[in-house]
Length: 617
Image: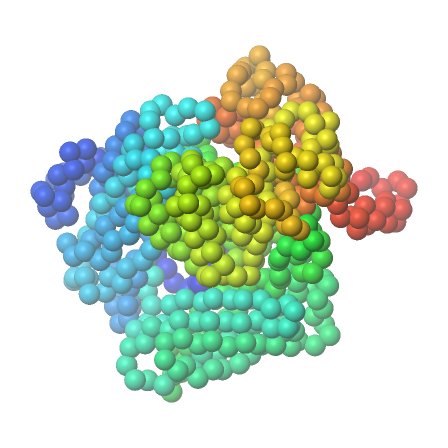
């Protein structure tokens, strides 16, 4: 039986919500006259239609308009069910790139800046009898290099490692009826060392009614917690002992979350007053811990070798927007089928439904903030504001094991000498610590590292022997830090001496398969090239096994999962067709890592335990 599609906000769900995806009225505003000419209250100016939530640059939107535009207007109508008028009505946007203003029936209900994060508006006061009119103005300056834009190119056509833009509405839009008093947000913290879980729930109060919040936590049908808490003020903050379900739930196999055992604790929260149920929401959490210690990533108290793949989250027909929820699920499944236990989502804050599937199916994630490409005071304010929203929205997902605020000094080109640019990297890193504090945080991934729990190195040599020379043991890694450096960039800034941090080859590979036949890739950007699938598998084997032979590295991230536009260095095509046998790739990817002796021991035990005629798994 197929699992149902996840709620667009999977960490806080209600049974009832209304999807506003579909055909909307649409127009460009290249002269930026819409506000002056009151397009909010006009229907005649909307001469086109667009399929939401797909960007106008994409084919999926029905437009495929890739030429530069900076201002976009959307319009649609909707009806409100009478049963939803007794409480409040919230209007949600998964993401609108980059600035948005929203009107309902001519009344401004929301303004938001930041192209990758969710926002909402209480539209109750703007409702009228009968049909409701929803208008959105989005602004995404085509050539603005100071705007956090990730891999979206600022000129036309795109080139090198940058792609066509994703402007305007590009994630789900939905209505959510809520009671007058309701649960507004939930925050979970796992404390394995104390066998505890902490919940913080924000309550939106209306009236003096006395309230209680019932919290139920269940794992595999076993009740771990069932407690009712008196609501004092606007927040509930409570710590629960875990496990409370007796001997049928154990730490080793049935409760802890990991990619191999993606156990989730189901949460039910019920808000009650003297007359009964006021609000009821669903959530979930993963009971797990992650940190770095003694050159290793430590998951649930044990060293854990990261086998990650770089993913851009880009589709030919829909750009950064996923074609549908099933495509997000399939992306996770494909990554796991290739033998990886993690993904570094590169220069994109992924749809929360993707994180849901990573939580549910078992895949660790590095969350990375999309970069700007110039340094200015406006960049500082934009990056910090959106980075806070990213962390606050996604911190509940157990799959998220690292925050990555910067990549390869993009947007901070003078990081070695500029104190203000160094301060920005430190601020973004410190914000992650202040808002979360339960996960490792990188500073600047790739090179020019200044303080970091994980030192990520980008090295695109195509020679496995060179990788062994640079990273084979502690002495080799020390020499690599001292130089000469891969990619001709300092790996650490002056004054920062690595001292026990986990070192991960966070970008390497990037091999292009160049075929002459009609079914293959002719040309395309990459960091090395081979001429046939067998050679691609051989090169993948050479590079990955060189990394796995290191006694020091704590993990790797191979570039990359799929081809993207002119980049032809994926293990899959842009349409998600494998270039080489996924089973063969997985066998290489899962080769035991020398840096985690327990992996080789376990592999040896399993090989001896397998019946002689059994096929390798």
